[in-house]
Length: 208
Image: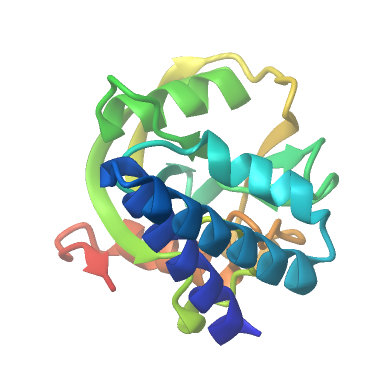
């Protein structure tokens, strides 16, 4: 399934890039056809409505590039901060984080996400890892988007724990107490790697 997903994503990228640069009406029609085929492929893989996937594709503009997700590893007394999902994967846990917005740096994005999702103020100290979400070794479930995931070691500065509309409880967990994770966002091996980097601050960042 992962290979079919990769092919569908590549077809969508080809179609999006073609629609961005072509001025030939014949080519526009061909690229739109390729985009519909990619949507049909993903719908077959995910059991989603083809029209909904096609609508998502058509909202994308410009040259197709991976999306970027930033996640924070915040520690307190050898325990890592996790937030409980209330929308997607409700009840499961993840490192605080989310999409990087246009106009903000990765460090600004991760600090903002922690504050919005937990109420804690933090400062990004270093990049721990830059992973390709679609790489088989990570074990994430299939996604419509090709995504890069940035993990930052963040220093806890203060604040009061609060809930957000996407997340509920925010708590610190020891390495042997990690609850069921939202695999859409983070997998156990990545959380374990955050602990390793916390114990070895001299290590360089991981990357795929």
